[in-house]
Length: 80
Ligand SMILES: [Zn+2]
Image (cartoon, rainbow, N blue to C red):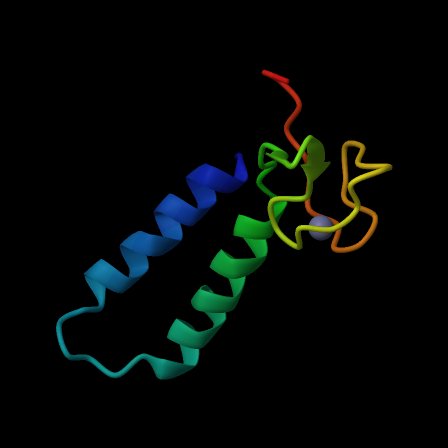
């Protein structure tokens, strides 16, 4: 299962439990998991002033590879 699918399924959790039932214990865990999964999805680098920047932290313009050395953001070079 890819991170995108897992995030989609976890988002259903909030829709299912949006009926007023108290589930704060599980809601917090699901929210943390969704944030962690979102950080695993590769993002395209940003071209700013002729330099490639990490789309997450905007740093690491010289040695940007498949992962940002500063924040660990996976970089998607598929269309670059
Ligand atoms: Zn970064």
